[in-house]
Length: 135
Image (cartoon, rainbow, N blue to C red; front, side, top):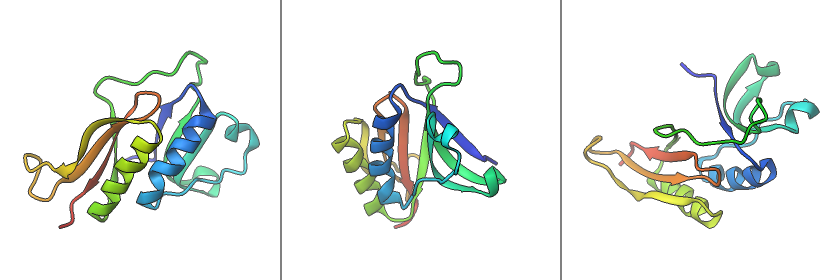
């Protein structure tokens, strides 16, 4: 359904440090674009191959309209975790990088009996979640 999600940031270097730390517990690595012009405005995590022909990634970058980045009210990006420990590590890494807690790791049985997740706001106010459906 999706090829990528792009979140705005006002400070790309800071966002790279944040997302490198926060996405490491989820085994998400930086994309390599081999495009120096693109790498000056955005960074991605996930899959980016064949010049973007095969892509499934989260991109964080400077807004293309050159206006200040802002977070959308009601907008959230949720990452899949295969183990509950990854959710815990995602949350801890985010808080260590300065994120705000929007919901600590735990079961949310109102979403399902095995819905284990944590919610944070990144340094630009974007809402993120890590979700695990395993026991």
